Picture 1 (cartoon, each protein chain N blue to C red):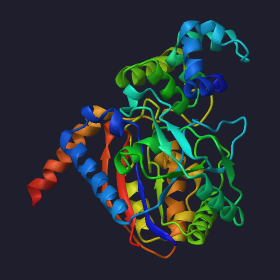
Picture 2: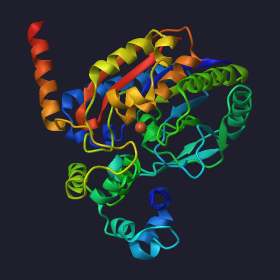
Picture 3: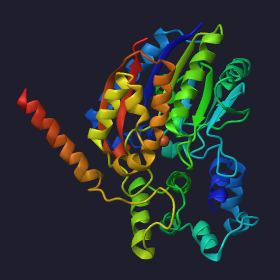
Picture 4: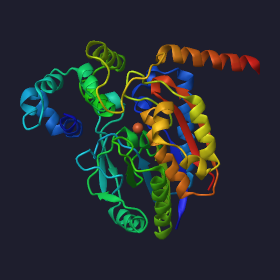
Length: 272
Length: 116
Ligand SMILES: [Fe+2]
């Protein structure tokens, strides 16, 4: 089969954990957009969902840091965070070891990916799943790009990873859905949490929605750090989705800075 | 020091041992006196100043059930007391704050609605 769904969304922990502190109207607009994304995902009738995330030291640490990794287990656990803080209860999330292995073997032909038979999800995956697969029935294939502990893989390697994911999805009989999750500009987990460069975000999303590969690959981490904070390293996850759907435009269904959620909240899908 | 927090943040058994005896849980990690003190109290502001990655620290603060605004303030207090972040990418660049930022966005929203 092939890719039946592709999109991107935010994963900031405050989206669920601090929902009661946000402007209720803004929160409702975001939650409606997530519900719409869930409907689109379900309508595509996927057999599994690959989540390209940028985790925050739930599994991978500087003692042994893969630039790219994929999960290869029949189940996963999460969240690692205090459930009361995140607003999401600890649960078991189904995986599909056989499918993972077939995908990983194919990805390896083009990209140097590590695999992990154990994987605990943090907010980077749990927040999207909380909205998109709240019953935790759909098998998840986690993938991770190191966006936290420099040195980080260059953007063109994230692009190659996305291309490899697409080839892998095309090589299996299952119907594959694919999402990327991350922030655009943001300064999370600092006293500046809430700061958002809306202009920078809108420009990036415009490039993303037109699948402008050259524009996206021309970002430079040093400059992004100054303009858009350390959180902007996570644009790698969005670009991976572009690479997996190269040449196809996307639609940004929702973008709105919500400071208490610490990010310009984004919901977008590829027009497959 | 970050290795300790990484292990603690992801391991519920380790969390129970830490809660039972914080100092004992630190054994086996290569830590200075300052780091031991910051981790066992815990002193969120000092940890942020020393350069603990913000994400690791955020999960640690959540584990201690520290409220969001208090956690942000503890980091600010730490910088006031000890100086700028010593290393890493989780630094401070200046921000008006969530409250005034949100108020500004609401105002813009109302103005735009008024235009229509
Ligand atoms: Fe993140």
